[in-house]
Image (cartoon, rainbow, N blue to C red; front, side):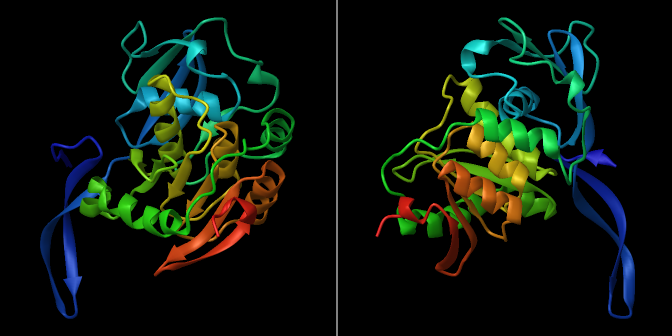
Length: 269
């Protein structure tokens, strides 16, 4: 396995079979490695992620779990003092908003992320309803997945990365991040905005490259985005939470059509 001049991608020797023919070939693979997230020097979580944008991932993870409130809570994000590999340390102004140690241990796989009763109860208690804003155009909902796909450079090479794109109300693409984990891609996108000084994100539309799960709606809800658009289907918990928060939630966005599962009143006529 060797690097391919992109931290998201590695090259590997494989055997390719086509019909009755087989032979050696080279292929690009999405990189997956563990990352330990520390807060003020203390370990908090381990996630399986695609390397790169680790600072944004950590900040987005903390925001998406309701452990920090905004940019003012973060003093620094970067390598730890011991310079350990695959570790990122977030320095806070006055610690986390609550102690998560008694709730659940954070081990995040690239496929699932964190979820469960503790997360559901917290987001219901702490996340305010999505702020009212300008109606979201049908054209933006339809255009968002295609524009996000055009900007997925590492997916183009590997076919193995999820993406989250954030659009402002005018339809401008603000940021797009890719990762083997759909929740990590969301954390990276939201975290990049937070570290840039912009959080929460009222009026912003999030677009994800796969299905809409509870954890993605949870993270979007805590960021106060106006809506979430998915290429695939939503889950029951995702729909329930989006309806509670007054968020627009669209699924199966493709070929000029989509389904609206929540927040239909936020869609422009």
